[in-house]
Amino acid sequence: MNAPETAKARQQGWQASLNITLERRGLKTVMSELHHFGPLRVQRPFYPEGLTSHIYLLHPPGGVVGGDGLNIRIHAREKAHGLFTTPGATKFYRSAGATAVAVQQLRVSAGSALEWFPQENIFFPGARVKMNTRVDIEPGAVFMGWEISCLGRPVNSDYFRHGEVDACFSVYRDDRPFLIERLRVIRPEHLNATSGLRNYPMQGLFVATGADDTSLDDARLLLEQAQAALPAALPAGITLLDDMLVLRVLGDSTEKIQSLMIPVWQMLRRHVLKKEAVIPRIWNT
Image 1 (cartoon, rainbow, N blue to C red):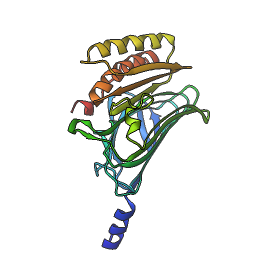
Image 2 (image 1 turned 45 degrees about the vertical axis):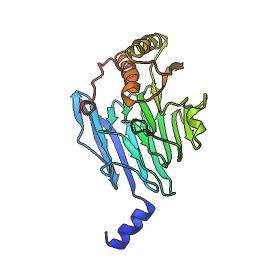
Image 3 (image 1 turned 180 degrees about the vertical axis):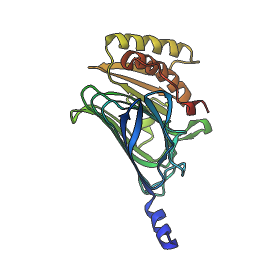
Image 4 (image 1 turned 120 degrees about the vertical axis):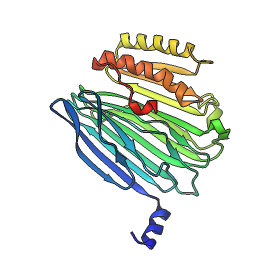
């Protein structure tokens, strides 16, 4: 790429896409299709638990600015089982005016399982971001995943007093909307409203299919136990929609939010997938 082309790309923002298809071959889940464009990559799959493929999504630039676009598509075909995570947070930096766009489309075919556990999204003050995560689940498929959002950098007392975040997380079954969660912050009062974030800079959402009344009771007990281990309890609630368990948490650190979500995931792993949860190695680094 010559200098004029480079300048034009930077002015319009870097565009990146990643398309992955998972299939079961023998005793392993493999990436039967992998197409990437721009700065989105994956590491080679890890197999710490046999069939299940642990895959790390990589964004080498380390951050997203106004005008950038990220598009991730993942399809788990029948009998495949993949777990996706990231080595670190996705950072959306202050914008000079343009909007950064992130689109994540996850499809889970009948008889397959997909686990989606990226690290948190950090929206720097002044960021302008539109994010859309859509999960399409076929009958008999299992999905477990979370989305964690941090407004500003609370550790540095750098609060999200200006900027715009419009994030949607939706689950569809048979192409019909089943769950639609929306986080829209365009004014400071959205951060402290009773129906907003209640002065907490972070929001976490965890969803899992295959749950029932027993797993709901177990999840509530685990949540109580995890809350008791924190210096102060966080606003959190669990709902069961048909067979989908939904856990929502407000907090001030990723570690605290994950400490409430991970035990619930581990229990559901045993209950739904009949497998012990294996923590991705990169979470321990």
